[in-house]
Image (cartoon, rainbow, N blue to C red; front, side, top):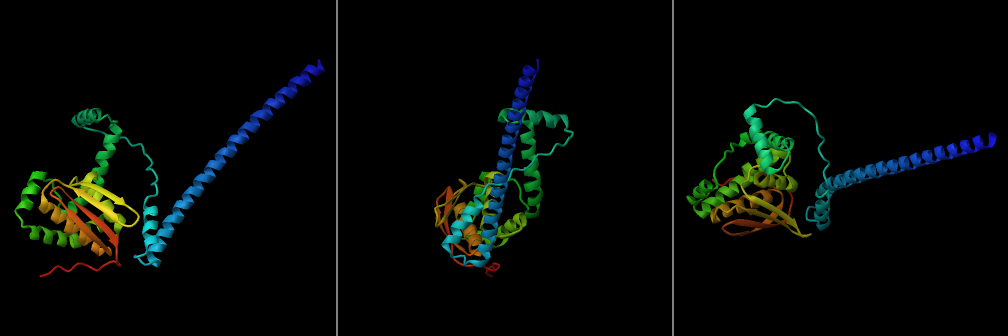
Length: 263
């Protein structure tokens, strides 16, 4: 009877050893993944720090800096964590919420987050600038009342003044990255004033605004954007059509001072 019991005990010990080895192997994999994640995050921070140091130490005409800028801006952003909060909705709002979510094939939670984000990040802050909802046809008619030169002069003045103030207000800085984010906000994200597209070919940035409101609107946007980019030490060449304006933008000199409007 002793031998079978010893044999059974050895089998049990082998099983326990196998289980412990498996657990240790999995634990090692988890540690390796965690180490890799920390190294990745450290690399992101290192690239971002290097980018900001390069901005301060290297001339803005430097082509390597332009490419380094694009690499830094293309780094993935960390996802926002979710928080559980209970709120009370009026019954009519809930009905509209569920109806809209069903039509768009979205969850009610997604729709609520979209609505709150738009209200808190766009509608509340933009009250400072006197924004209001105006139809596309009305804006087109208003621009048609101007001459082309009046539209261009208005664009230049607002590009150097209100547009730069808008970027600084929302992003606490005035640089190329913040300007692109502001155009996204004014365009497809919140304002819906135009469709926005940005591309970079390694040398020049291409910024495209599609608005479908006529040539004078294109003239206004072209001059406004050239004025903003001029303040950033960049030069922009615009190609205008009735429906859109496309600008080829490149770095030329350092940040310009405040715009002084002609008397």
